[in-house]
Image 1 (cartoon, helix red, strand yellow):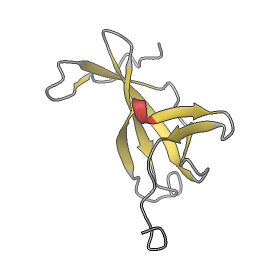
Image 2: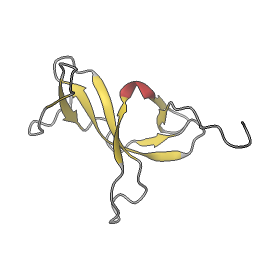
Image 3: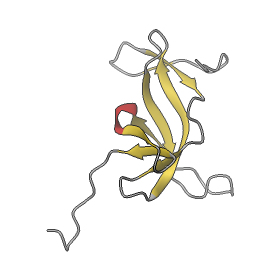
Image 4: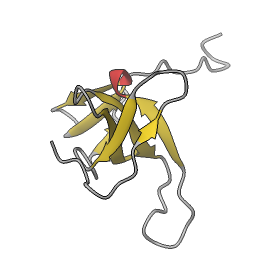
Length: 102
């Protein structure tokens, strides 16, 4: 399932799972529900025993590849859903209330 043979396996503390990295979805764009691009998937972590994707590493930095530091965070896979309208993954997040909506 695309598991990198030389990648180190990791355990999520307290989960009892052995996780491995995979390049599935690497480079796929990530969007907010309103269609604004947030970043891209840098890799995913899957359960070695079941093949279930547990979370994605999402880079939220627009400067990746042009010399800026990266801004990568693990995002639970359950919060990402492929959206054909965007041509990438939609991050299911609630927007923050603004001064106008309070």
